[in-house]
Image (cartoon, rainbow, N blue to C red; front, side, top):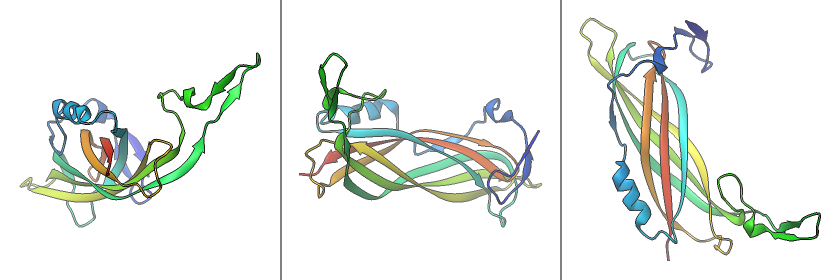
Length: 198
């Protein structure tokens, strides 16, 4: 058993069964893998994309009863803003033997090159956790949460700062487990595709 004040407003005893439990949770909002592959085939040259995850521990509101078990998680993504920004650009360097290595050939471990432009995207992950209450009649209850996120996509260096993009957001996976009678750990894996609007 662990005792932890992990959200600064609750303190509960919980154990590490989260990783060992395979609850049968109904997940709503996850996009099928085969359809996501089709999304990537549409305009592959102009498409830009990012993958990321949102991890969180959420507490059931005080007016709601304790959790007996999680029944389902319903999630959706809402994009609230986008903007193109100027960022540093790798210009290159000269090796000890005098060879110049141009910046557009220098990438990081994700094979991403800095171009001097990024598309910054802000959004909200809206979700509802449906659970059985820890009461005699085991009534179904739900609690809603909204978690903000901000991500970026590296885009072409000649992209105007006024350029807008059509954004497509997809939920690839949702993992949820009960940490205590009042708290839930969730991890949502997201994919966002951006296509320039002409």
